[in-house]
Length: 368
Image (tube, rainbow, N blue to C red; front, side, top):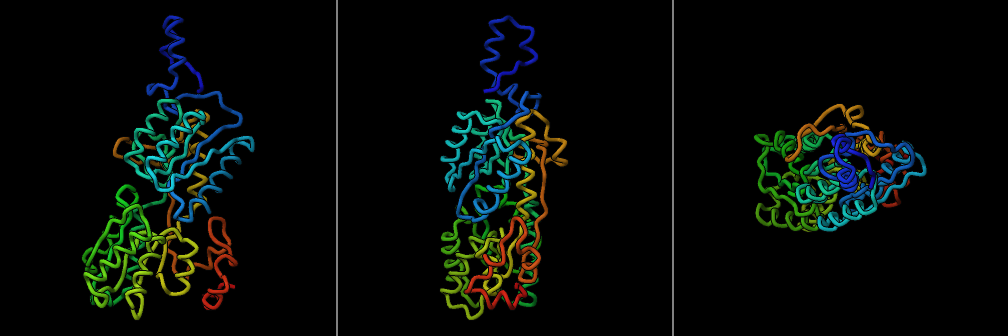
């Protein structure tokens, strides 16, 4: 624990000063960036990611964040990493571990944005500033970085309408939203509804527990049974993992031609499905700018610097107002878009995408 005096402690008795030092992690002074710290050397920064079913976290977010932190704070800096594997209680325990290990700052991508609030407060009370990453956690977070989540939903909705064309009036779509514990899921949903409402009939809509592909698969089976496969002209899927489960259900139901299915995260399997005309599109979220922003905010806060010089905008959560934030712009990823991203940092190489199974599709798409 770092020991630094509150201004008020200067004028109290020596015994009170000792108490003040022991309580240096109190909520009043543990702003995690409200006062300058004498921390110019190597740092210890915690990184907590929510799950490993979505390939992006281990494949891109983790290494990109670690790399940028060491660029900024030196190779002697330590990044302590844990993955909650979609378990909110495990993530709360992981925060406790980071507090025990006295990290200088914590980057947190929450499993459950509401239930983690008490853990965020606990870290803050111990003088550990928390940067909310990708999902805006409740509690006294000091900074936040993510993509423009409502824009993600709008991109998905616009892409689905484009794919449907005249078929939009001939049937119904199924909406497969994300988990209610993820605040981003609501923003994706709101963005999509802003585009789709009034332009296509929504036959069935689901909030998918824990974003799990198997839950999306079961929901899709229910939608097919309820609506009939002849009525389903398209599927809004909030991410790629669920899209995979949805497409499996569509194939099992014997669709002669798969309806367009959206996605998000530009996962390798989704990119390959797009090439094979099984999934219509995904959303490419540039991971490097988001990861770099998280690293910059965490290092600055760990050194007692205010994040305002890095974060030029603010957002409100359910519990906090005007949180300094950096928001990254996402892009649609259809078959025509893949070539421009191949090999770039935060995307896949030609060899990863164009395996023997997808060689013909890659050549057809001009990926050589």
